[in-house]
Image 1 (cartoon, rainbow, N blue to C red):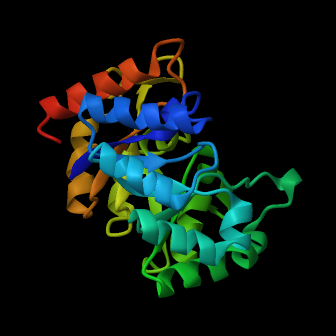
Image 2 (tube, rainbow, N blue to C red; image 1 turned 30 degrees about the horizontal axis):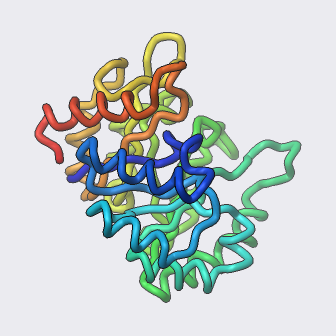
Length: 249
């Protein structure tokens, strides 16, 4: 397994092309060799391809807004071909009853997207938060998703912090979803429900690493949505140093 950085951590930097380019450079300077592109300013696919090459980085996953996933599916596929990214993710889907976003809505919107991605050699990825541990019809929403769609049509970007925040066991869910988690998000869970650099909280990462490797995970992406007032780049470096100390690169 290899490690990378989720650029959502640096979203305040990536709202202009100049800032986006600087974020890629700074991430590469830390030592990361891969990124996830998420919550950035608009960009052209050729621009991203050039900036990735300039910094010896590869993009292994994106989070793409729902209107683009569903309304610009063919262009999304073509753009990801340009910068060489197979996994295309849905970063957030509301399961709140008041939003009227249930299983039928999900199926109607995303089943065509999944099939188009599969036909083009891309992979639709679902990213969890804590809400997917609500129970509907006696099971967590995450389990319903896993049972509703075959592995070849939908994978999961399992997020260690949000699994634990939802009352789940990250290692157990890595085992349950083995074979369909090519990419995971690593963020630690500290006292007070705070996000922390890897190794500075209380998640049992020994088990996470064990189950991820057994389940054929390829990439572990460091993400810290909230750095609690600290420099996000410093948090990314501390996580990188911890993962390097554990033998990952």
